[in-house]
Amino acid sequence: MISNRPYLVRAIYQWIVDNDWTPHFQVDANHPFADVPQEFVNEGVIVLNASPTAVQALDMANDQICFRARFQGVERKISFPPQAVLAVFARENGQGMPFPPEPYPTEDAAPLSDDKPKKRATLKVVK
Image: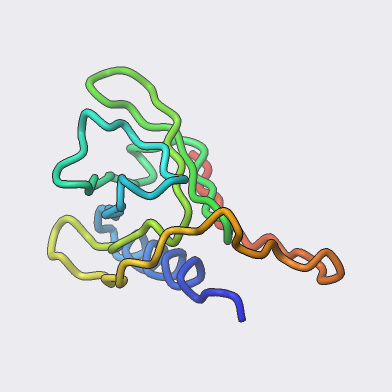
């Protein structure tokens, strides 16, 4: 069974944006597939403003969330799997959804079967 986490992350993100709030991701910065600016990590976690006005080229796929954002005026490419998302919430009121930490993938983790069609569900925000 595929994880429901990417679907829930997209849904909560869209609900926050539709309410004119500021969506934030709380991300496990130690996840092996998380590419986030380590200088802004606090106790293994980074909180990222993912507002449509703060990020560019947001792509929330089932296997990876990525976007470009500025940190102290320098543009950075950010990417992390949905499994690294610990919460999606609105800055204004904390409304959103927490997620339990998931175990990190192992080297011997079985890949998706090649005989199954791969579907790519995404939500793209275009400015």
